[in-house]
Length: 319
Image 1 (tube, rainbow, N blue to C red):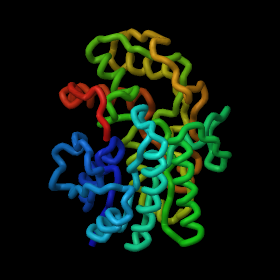
Image 2: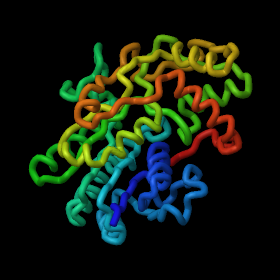
Image 3: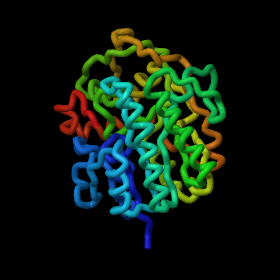
Image 4: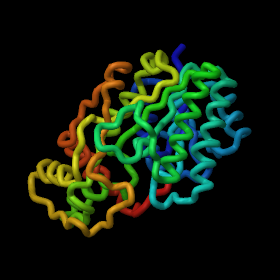
């Protein structure tokens, strides 16, 4: 009999992509979503993926859901604070830290085989070189602090209780079903309409990793089970600037795109150096990203062109 998979944050960007891949692979998958979640990313999956509307900050509600589902593998992607409209410090800490406690407790009670926690590259803070898992963490936002606490809690539980938990520390994930106000959906949709792109500084850099590659890392179940307590970077190991992204977009479109540099204000965390060292992911998981920036942006253009209507009325989706 196969495993049952549970995805928390199933209505979110990465969670929905993970649910779709698990379903395509023939796996039994359940999703936990917020009571007020908009399920637009899961359109067409209702029925195939049983969804449980659960307040992740409620210990009783989480425990009840886990007991009913009986999962063997849990992917914890539910989070709060990743978007500019999620700024409330108390809610960020409650969702990310208390929510993690509730999920971990439920995993221990139901005897899961694997819990994969989702970390963030924001935990590192600013670095002048590729970020390694053993680097000192220097978070500079409420969200980053909460993700640090979440990761450290998982490491402590693995060490002290034997909880089979691994943290995948994600860099700048992009791709299908991404939140509409994020960089890639914004510039791709504008380019498809032949509109100018309002951009920050061209040297602002990130390690952009396609969601399909990220999902591939989550699915390496046997390898993940062998490395409880570990934190593993998931990026490309290649830094790309906003100028690189615009150039890749123009190349994939086959025509110039107009970028109005400096029209978007810089964010506090914007920097010209932000890239993962992904050697640990390759060593422990045998994982490498398949899509470079050019191929990933090309894939996005095709997908967003086919799903323009999905984004037409979504200036901002809060999932």
